[in-house]
Image (cartoon, helix red, strand yellow):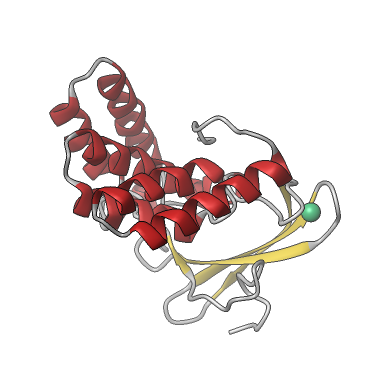
Length: 202
Ligand SMILES: [Zn+2]
């Protein structure tokens, strides 16, 4: 695989698993350049590797830095009936947010789990992982909160609210040192980019 793939932060990663073409765009829309800018997709190339992958070359709208995202599309490539299934995932996400806001936590949990389902949903949907983790904090289930919030932070390491929520989970688990590290990252990101809303783009 191309060495520059997914190396925006200097670490080589495996292709990102997606279950629908639409989610590739959602994923990129939720990433930010280290300068804080958003990415524009400048080129897309299908690669007939095993599994097949989709390569999106992007450029930062602010500083012109380039970044390449490579997605593993093996779960749906060539199966046209699966191409539109992000619509369902998106419906579950919005329904889950609504349930969360009105305090129906069990119903919200059930829907968030469908959103991030490894086969039917999008397991790399960071904002769904974030809200699910937050919900587990509210339910006083910090081990599960930690699991999902860690995944969210791995996907979107430049979003301050994710680090803040992970810090809360660490604290409840008695991981004080890690909590302080996460809060320090949060403050640094807020200093660099300002305070952001925890909403995400869909
Ligand atoms: Zn930039």
